[in-house]
Length: 314
Image (cartoon, rainbow, N blue to C red; front, side, top):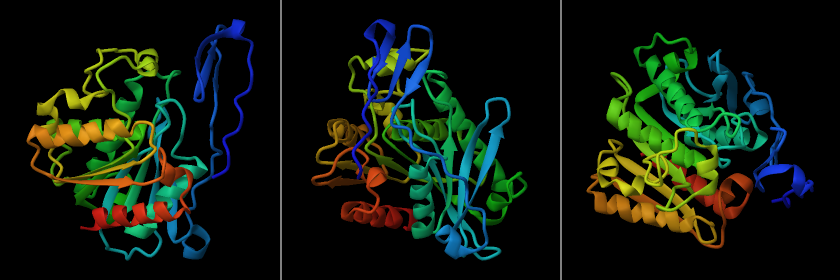
């Protein structure tokens, strides 16, 4: 992986809040963000060779907020073939990242090709310009929009024709893992509609709280509810965990992940909660936070991809 670009210097007298390496807020209200990957267009072509075997398109779910998603579909899908549905939520500390970035576009098209799934990569609004709960509200709106196609009469033909709604998965990395987890909580409590079954949840290096102050969360949250907010710290409520209706969870962490302890805490809390599903934990040696996203060509990223494909296929 290439080294990260240097963070530009700024006059401290002009800075209101500094959350390097993610963003900086100036006293005049301007927000400067870092670590932004370039955007790439979708690849809606019938030529498998030109798209890596996957077609993709962008959809807008809410014209008012411009919330949408990038959809990926294997180009080799047969006319009436039904594939599992993967709803994916990107990471980036709730403040950076995009479903349209080259990083996540390449990752989701790879997953769609390898696992033979219909992938939905959610484009949610980012903090601090759009404080929490915007990212949760947006992700739920897209999740419900996807599920609304279970009657085969929705606005998106790829779902009407090719989605197997008895095999729906939620997934995310880092902050996206946090959001994906809460989407599973909401789906378990409120349901996703007739004919829709949430089979599994994939959490890659998820960002969870640990019961104490999280300065970034506090700053970017407009409806702050304390450090045991179930969105931030689901481990604080065994009833919340035991109520998850998905059959299985794949939890991915790694040896040098700076929040590895939180994944392990989540694993133990889930086991103690009485949840009756199957938990699979993948703990990769000598790798850091979201290594499989940042260095997808690495050997360990390939190994993790195989575990992911197996999880989605079984």
